[in-house]
Length: 110
Image (cartoon, rainbow, N blue to C red):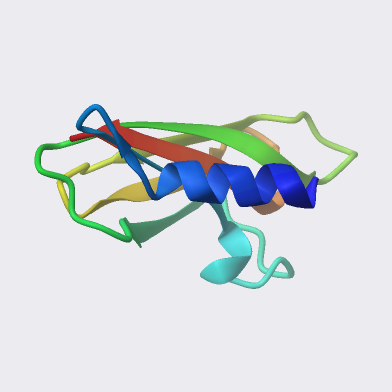
């Protein structure tokens, strides 16, 4: 697993045929404690290097701590994407109690 993480890190720092890829993880715990569940958590992500044009950004859940007594409803996504970064969101709705959420994101562009 360490070797794979190292390889992903190497590839995320390289531009291949003019394409730049950056991928990292983010967690709601970076902006609020898990003991204060909220239905909406967001943060501004800054890319390690500025893109030449606005990149495409994808996000996926890589970890979630939700109440087992409620339904699992969690959505992760990015908004306000520009060449320097984007806003990452981890939201729940209905009766879901979201203690924390880990998000893996990838930005691809030039």
